[in-house]
Length: 443
Image 1 (cartoon, rainbow, N blue to C red):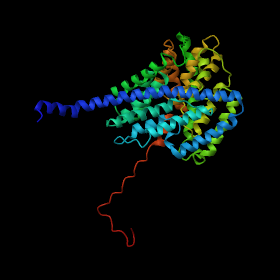
Image 2: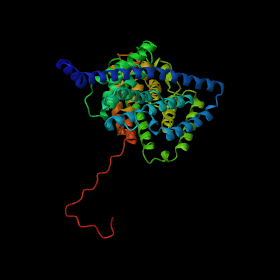
Image 3: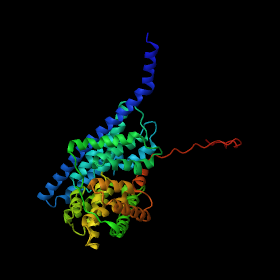
Image 4: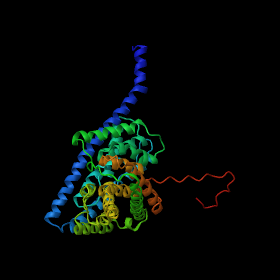
């Protein structure tokens, strides 16, 4: 027979200590899984883009057939087998965190959906789609976090989903602080609960895993160029307005054409075909708008020039990819469009640093699209290791947020999340006490 002390210890472990450690193990294990996945996914995405680039070098006009056919196939497969995997992935996380019910997420953050989205996003990059891997990383990151909690029989709630999604941002960009900011500003706004240590721990661990595998790197390289003092404010104002309006326009068009009842939804195959043809035509004509746009953006950040039409061409290519119905994010392509916009506007200020104005363009357009100023400032600062531009970046972000709100009142991800929100059941009619008897034959 067990002693009273041993029985008390066993009861304390079962009721208090055990659940706490199981929760920590689930969060830590999930975060490691997110970090490992993000590292493998990043390498696979790079390889997919290299394969496509090799094809275009050998057969320059092949994308006119490959890209539309690929878009049609991906849109059909997504609609047929994994409709919850379409688009970015971040709206799904917002919807899941907002409407999680006793651990059930309606398939929005399942491993099956996330795995399909991963391979479909790689497929989109393999055929030249102007998509990013960050949104899909967020969705599968949340799926991995939820799966580890279910495996260890730890309750799943909105904080778990937010932690997995934020860990995906941190691991995708090697920006842990930006992951925390994204959780606070974008994901948590859909979930009315104070942020906990779970989110912080998951973000840090997930960010450290790819760092240990790939080494210490800065996403866009170290940028030391700045626009200092009073000169920076008018530049930030002008770039902020232009970038915010352009980003708001992207959101407005996307929300209008991806809303329920839109003509695009009634003809998904034809929509994918037309969007694929648009992406292919722009890519063949320019040679610069394929994939995430990372290389073009990096050259702009480093102070080199791109053609004046790069920003509008990448804008249209990214919009067409987003509307096609194929899985893929808009994070990285938005940064690329913003970089092109900043490079274009640097011609208005020839005496100032092109690299610094490119950073202002990146943040202004990015904020215009996602409407998350704090996240944008932190993510650009971490991706370039540039702290001297913090104040101008904040100024441009705030101005862009205001300008974007004038163009599109609804935030992109939250608007798109409505398509993944389960309908509320209609309340049953209550019988009135003195209601007359039903008429004969009714019923």
